[in-house]
Length: 167
Image 1 (cartoon, rainbow, N blue to C red):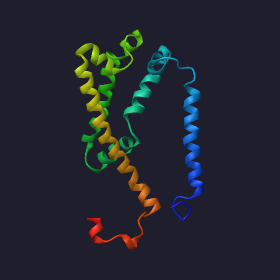
Image 2 (image 1 turned 30 degrees about the horizontal axis):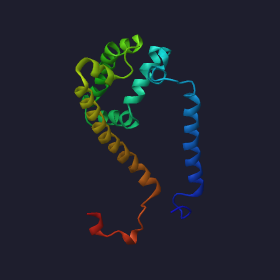
Image 3 (image 1 turned 45 degrees about the vertical axis):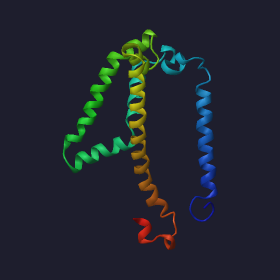
């Protein structure tokens, strides 16, 4: 497919430069991390507002950022309850987890679940997170594929597409 009008060699070079560049940036920024404490809580050197932005950036995808106002515009404002839920969730997380992170006794939310409720609850929460994350990621990949397909056009030549192959 490379060089046939679709994904060209310059696209490959740009993609590889991006992947190598982001990897090198991550290695350079993480060069001072020597323990899990450095990785998870930045050795308690991060201010509260940076943690807030990190939580917001982690839980809010571009799809959410774009789709919720669009749905509110097309229907009613009931979808904006998600934003209120995010706000409430952040307050609960800040109240329950951040003090323990700063005390240095916990590194992750799963460590809190294990300490408070035991290993089975931690494992269950991990599995639930991974399954729901897989579903959410599949929706995000599908939503991203729609504009990409509109931009690059069909990948399968039209002569190979039959009504039976679509169904």
